[in-house]
Image (cartoon, rainbow, N blue to C red):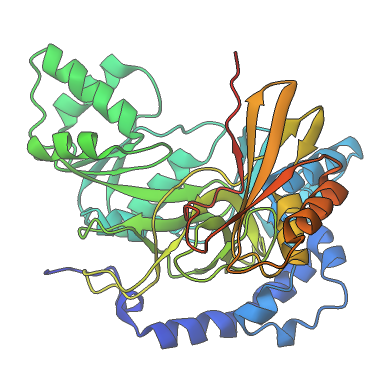
Length: 422
């Protein structure tokens, strides 16, 4: 497979990459300690000692709901709208370095954009999707409130592309721009691309210049991908968030998503910060080497897993399977919330359980829960002991069903709510 890589980082040895990432960790920890929010959480941590994944795993995970809570608390107190997490801002905040832009995502959560070129690191994903210097890129992501439009535009500019700022909506005007400007490629959601093409077909409008695409923000079904390819438009996926920017991107191999070069990804057991072995499905936790917004071990809330082996395109970074669902599987049983972290605590107290899943069945208000637990062998009374632990932690009675190792699906599901909603 002949591939033009974005830079030499993509093909360095895995050992060299890992060494470089671990060597950069202490500076990132020190940057985090310099913020109001993480400075308190990391008090007493010797940044110089955080030089391995094992050491990183001992630091706390920050999840989106915690970020939102800190921002709300700071706002109520008339303080920092970033909740003490950012090292950049504006003069009234007393920030040492200015932010270029500020965005507001649903919540609302406020995110800063720094002045570094390609701040969100999207150029690498665009390059893998076939975009090159001199291309005209039709950008149909939002340019207001949320950062998606800026994420794609700054990445395209880093490649030397020209960008048409389409934004969202205004389908007829965007289609007119496509027919008159003849862009080389599209960036936006896959669903809006489908709408544009269907509208073009209905009006008998040809778009022969449109050959490439980078899509994100929602599922990209294989059926749509193949339909686009049949009309000569080859689109690829990017996995990014407003908090940390690009996480992973699709390549011509179409075998998982390759991780970006400037971050450390862990797959942890949902509800915990405990890393899982490669191949296991869990929550994606990201540490980005970004001193402007040093989110250490940021829990995305998304489920995925590490793929074994390297990408056939020659890129040597680890790959993930793509988005496999949400890690927050909280269920309400008999008026009480049951969280994945509680099930994780049950498993921690019974290390003989290889994998566990709480199954909730029946109708609402008349429900029952059963912990399906993989265990190779169990002594008499084992199920009763585990059920007691389950009751102690959740304050709810439940049954325990011993399963053979390997019998539960490796899909990251910790709580399986099978109740009828009618």
